[in-house]
Each structure stands twice: as structure tokens, then as C-alpha cells.
Length: 252
Image (cartoon, rainbow, N blue to C red; front, side, top):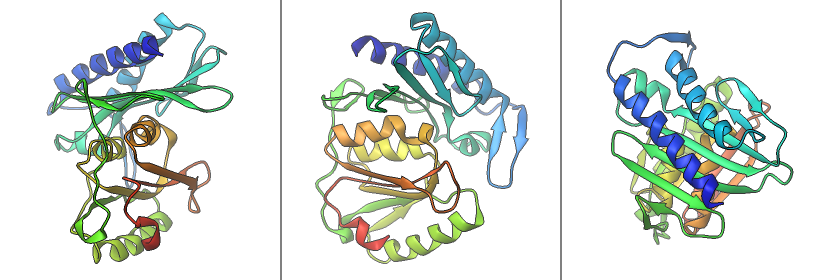
């Protein structure tokens, strides 16, 4: 799995370098949705990552936010979010990342993950069965077990039904915790839990590429991730990720 991780890290750094170079410049918008933005740069970043992975593993499959599944019929599937936090990126908010994971195609078991934040030059990496690392140093989730001590992020998704659920959950959680945050990048929310900056993350309507790498990082960092089919949009998921110590489920 070391070769998988090395490839993912190299691809994340290459894509991150490209999107950082364009940050703050005039951007080509492919689609402007009610609660989301699709950029041409998303497509270019995805293609760069795809080309680098398939050059090394031509029989592997790649599932990406841009363009669906491509590649071969091998036993490994890559899961790619070429810019997680595109809305932040478009509005000049320096909180976005590249997220890449690989899993076994049949069992869906996650094998490795990389999240790269090019603005902070921070790289989270993980291999199943080993500790999660940040810039080469082992990390772990926080030890905070009381809601009154916790910092929690609640995501607000892209449909009225998901927004309504998010608002209700936010109210229940916000009254109990030290602080809440809404950051605009699911992958970085997971990475921040893995290294103890945040204690939990909740969102109703999330896609696999948003959280695949982060899921393995939280779990290998000692935390807990609960995924269930979303009640608001078929094909998406509800997520509750935490340090495994907070009673966050009681407030959902």
C-alpha cells in the first residue's frame, strides 16, 4: 500500500500546486447552481490526478466528483475530489483541499487516503492499520469528552430538505458546545478531527468523494465515523464523524 499512498500524495501535491497557482485569478465557471459552483479548474485538476494514477496503475478504476468512473477493471478503485471547497475557492476564501483515497473495489474497504491543503502546505496521509500523519508526524483525535468543551462543525447541504435538517441539528448542538464552525470543506473537517482541531462533524447530504480519505484518517486516528443513506437525496449519505468520545449522537 506504500506505492498507492506515494502515488496519491504525488498527485494531490501536483493538483494542489495547480489550483493554488490559479487562486485569486479569473476563473471559468462551467455551472452556477443554487448552492454550488462547478469550475473548469475542477475538471482540469481531476484530469491531472487521473492521468497520474493511471500512468502508474492502468488497470485501476477512478471515481471522481467530475466525470464519474473511468479507468480499468482492476481490484482497486480511487475516489477523488479534485477541489473540495470549490465555493470557498471561487470566492477567494483560502480553505479548500485535494482529497484522494483508494479502496478495494469489491469489499469497498478503504486502503489509503491523502488530503492536501495547498494554502497551508499541510498534507494528511493514512494507510489502513497505521496511524494517521500530518506532514509526516503521527496525529490523533482529541480527548475532549464533554459537549461543553467541544468545537463542532455542522455542514449545510444543497437542498431545502437537507438545509432544514441541518438547521435543526445545528440548534440542538450549538446550545451545548463551546463553539460551532461552518468551514465549507468536508474533507478538511475530517482532517481537522483526525488531528484534534475539531471534535465532530455532522452533515445530512454528502458524497463519497467528499469524505472517503477523511473517513480512514479519523478512524485510524482513534475516532468514529457513522455513515447512513441520506433521507433527503438518493445516492448521498448522512455523516457523523467525531473523536469517538463525545455523545454527539444524542443531539442528532
